[in-house]
Structure formats: structure tokens, C-alpha cells
Image 1 (cartoon, rainbow, N blue to C red):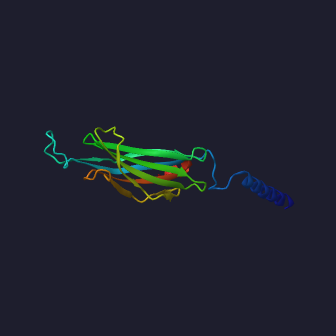
Image 2 (cartoon, rainbow, N blue to C red; image 1 turned 90 degrees about the horizontal axis):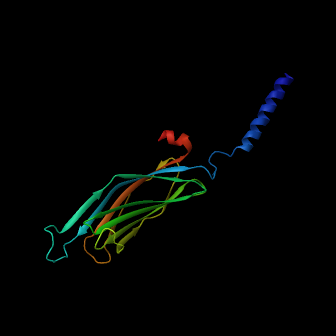
Image 3 (cartoon, helix red, strand yellow; image 1 turned 120 degrees about the vertical axis):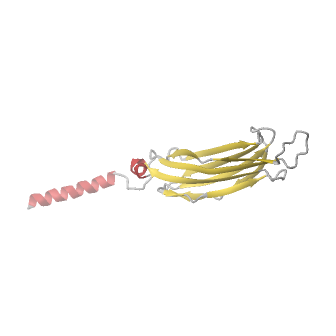
Length: 184
């Protein structure tokens, strides 16, 4: 009887010591990699030419482009806590939409998300002439969750007209490690 008590006590003490030596579940570890799947559902671009009265005007007054879905993967850790995911497209060889999603891993393993949709309009798809911009409201995404669909648009506030970019996306925060990855 005394031997069984001694073994049980030793086992309990060993478990307690082992529990103290291993970080508790949910605590941040600098090497833990969080995986996020960012899916741009659609980007809708409009190049409005209705104000142009030049000799080479096309019979259409506008050009429309729809792009997506597209997927990007971001991996964050506490030693590398930020990432920027970018989606960009051009229509009519002069109107470009650029969706930038900034991701920042927080100490509690949630990811802070903010996004910017920018509309560029100029003489080519590589223009840097920014004519419209929309900043999204920052939100946080816990591990194991999916964001609600974020939808927003940017209009040409610089020159007027109907040039525009509209985009929507979702993010799935898979969390840390292979256990979470197998679930997805």
C-alpha cells in the first residue's frame, strides 16, 4: 500500500512539474505560425469615358472589369507579426484598383485587420495618380474564425465621373500548428 501511495505521489509531482515546464495552451510562442487564408471574392472596376469628346473615342462610354476570386496565404508569428496582402487589377488600360489588407498578430493571438482600397486613374495601368481611396474599419479576428464578408468601394473623388473600384474579401484565421490546419 505504501509503495502505491509513493508511486501515485511521485506521478502527481511529476505531472505538476511537467505542467509548469510546458507553456499553457493559448500562450504566445515566438515561433508559433498563424496561417491566414485571404480570399478576394471580387474586384469590380469601371473606366468611365463618357466625359471624353476626342476624335478617337470608342463607341462605348465605359469599360468594366471583374476579377476574382483570388486567394493569398499569409503566415504570422510573434517574431514576424505583420504581413501585407495585395490584390491589384487594371481595366481600360488606365483605371487601376489596389486592395491592400494589413494583418498584425496581437499578443493574445488575434489578428488585427485593416484594409485600404485605392483607385488610380491615368494614362496607363502603371499610373500613380491616385483619384480615390477608402479606408476600412479595423477589426480583429480570433484563431479558428472566418471574417464576415468585407465590401467597400472607392470612387473618383479627384476628377469626378464614374471611375470606380469595388472589392470584397473574407479571411479565414486557421490558427497555430498542424492540429488546426488538419481541421480546415
